[in-house]
Image 1: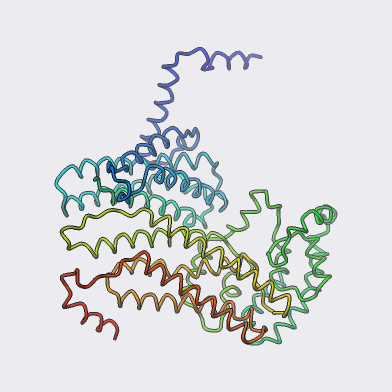
Image 2: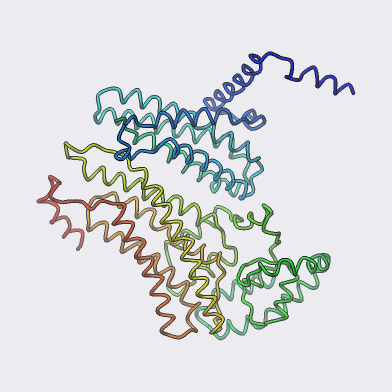
Length: 195
Length: 324
């Protein structure tokens, strides 16, 4: 009975909407910080959410969208294709690690993979800014450097969270798809050219 | 455990000494039945037999699973069931709607996957890839991720090579071709699943007419096909080099290696058959494989047009040099 009353007191029913939104935003922001400074911590795993991945994925897909009117000549990835690659890829990797015998829940893994796109979204932002400048080999080199660094960052961050959930003799098998996933996203970012 | 040791020993000897292998197959069911009766089967016997009838319509004789009860029935029914069936009794089985059932297809360790990839890259003449590396534990990890890697390797290096070919031109404006990913995915996954399915059906049909000593399950065939595609990943990356001769030499090397893996694996399965049909089957397998590689090269990689390049005068000499 007592626990029931306490539950009612701490419930979110009678708090203002602003508090609720701010609390969720704070949780998402905290997880962004965890990705940027990857250390062995369980915060990202313990209370997962899919808000962060959704925001990152939509941002990435919107920035990858080219502003060309003529869609026939537009060979780059469309919004839906980026969206499908990110979510379908994350689900496949998660299923793969579950099938290999990893002890991590489905949504925890999805949450980690989604949040670790953050460095690549930052790379996309930098690339768009760099592309405003004069095109040329130096321009490309700068973009290549940024994308490679952010790709390595994504890999390091995601392995820091995911590697411990696998049996030691299968770690490489579980990490390899993650590598492929971020590599493909990096490729999409690097080959992006605005019309 | 004695049965396992014998089976591996037999797998090594299978190709060299055929009659000996046949005798061993005959001698196995008794031993296996004895083991099962004494150790494992007793506690679960009743429940297994209750489940038996409901499962039996979906049960395929070639697949390496099935409950202990069916196993015993089959062993009592016909003596010439193959080694896959014998080992299947040692695997725990669960119905197909559970997650554990699918986990058995991903039951591999890192070193096993590396061994299988190595085996597909360095085929030993006269040795069977399935008996040597897969040993009744076919996995879907390798085929699935090798196909995924191959899809992106072909799409990305196809893009890169087209970019490199047109690099010198002033009028050329690079546009990424993302649809290559979806087309490559369709082609590769269709090849890696539909061809094994057709081959499995064909081998089943031939098996019902002529008794072959070696028969493969569907998963084993998928596994062989998946791993045999691995050689195309480095090949696709090297296809970036915009030189016609280099590309065709690479195709020949890749085709030679993976084609010989496939041919040596499936030759024992059709050897007992009519000579003409056996040769036609192997020829068909190799032909489809050739079509895949040549088709990928022709479709995804633009032919380097010599008259567009500033190196027109140098190119023919280089081609001759590499061809020699």
